[in-house]
Image (cartoon, rainbow, N blue to C red; front, side, top):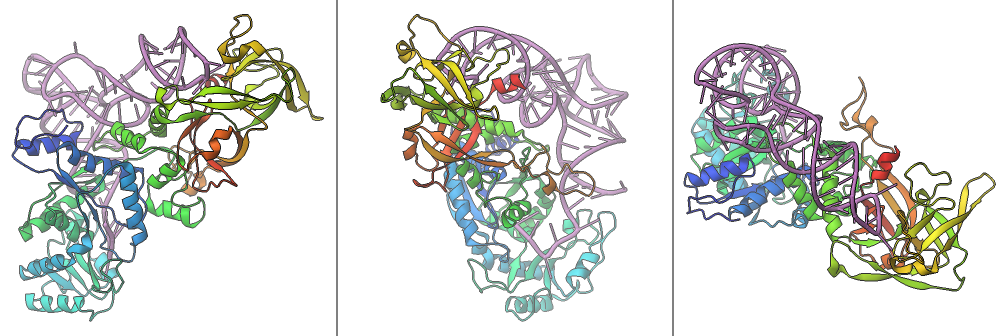
Length: 560
RNA sequence: UGAACUAUGGUGUAAUGGUAACACAGCAGAUUUUGGUUCUGUCGUUCCAGGUUCGAGUCCUGGUAGUUCAACCA
């Protein structure tokens, strides 16, 4: 619910500490809520970014404010328009839209002017030390750094040198512009942080206009300030940067944006490191950034997740400042919860066992009416073809059933979902003794939920008619890693040792004919099996379905 | 062994000095033409030691543990 910013009564209880901070700032007289989502276009967005997007856009929405999209493109060697486009697509898919789209590079001129202001105030200088010298003289967390021999150049010399840096007179790495603060500061970031470095690189937006590029710390706060961001929300690792963020703004005397930090999202059985995800893509361990095993937003989309399920997840995990690892099961809960409401039901057999219904006429063919979604009456019904020969799931038959098994077994009767009661009369085996076929009889009076004598059976199983079904490739996805924490490795081991060899199992299945027209990405529940959708690789000639998530299976649990 | 941040069930998150709660997971049961859904019940929590207070998860002091910071990355 939107809050009238000129009305001091706040109607809604804050949902987390950031929300509370915003309510406090409104109570103190702030009339705007302006946030921003500031990705660097150097990779694809993942579920952790989704949380940040939900926070930034969600908070702006809640208070009738605005959220900008700002690409933090201050490092041309890592960035690319490919990522810009993908990021925009993912944000839109999640259901958000930005007030304005900006780039840190839009502000390069202003940033340059401000650097001159700082030089003139004696707060910045050109340093000729090498990268190694700068590193060595920075000190460590316990020992103070040493001042650069170039630290006390005159303002005039600094102005001249900085301009010549901009004009391209010096090679990469030969000079940097540094803020002049305190080489002994307990916060390492204050030990004369680098503001500009020389990079003769083409930028994806500014081309070759610049050969000096601002560093994150020199750019981010000022960009926020230019956009008059009221609440600059980021993750906890930027916490130590906040004093520097404030320092530049204060020295420049510009609009005071403020930064607030929350703990980033971690998920069991996966990881968010862009560097490592990139490695998986480059080494072919996965099919690409949108491989359904990846924690990226595009992968979740391809796998069959809905935007609502991801938003609910972001809401459910909450926002706080302590380190956290969310159980992957919680994400799966969210997608099941949503898909249960919206996904139409279909029948598909993934591990087929042939059943011949011996007393069903060979040439007979009939249609049964199946409910598309028991949770949504408006989804209507469809017709499912039935015939003498059907496939059932191998798991739905056991020659010697354990206790409480109420599926098919010799002499036992089950309901075929939306169809007849059948009874197993004979088990056919091959030479090795493997069950290859079942001979069953059906009760002709048992269609439509009834039976000839009013008897009821406990077991209901799904099926497909062999002559009507079509075969499709099925991709079953499991966690990317075998360990909750991929970094849980023995001495000398690598996180890659924990990659799950069974993270994708490619198999096939027989699907009911109505699935032939399934549009790519549209979710379906394969009854009793899980949620699936047609993959982006799917074609009419070679249909491919992804398993989004399994259904909960309490029998599998009992049976363990 | 510097600084900053953090510490509540198995996992998350709340409780804003006044009965430690909600969700997920787990367990048990009911309903069910999906062993799904739904419903009911149940298990289980304040890092440690002092202090302030009528009263502390909350405030103070001191520990302990975890995270982050020493890229010309963001």
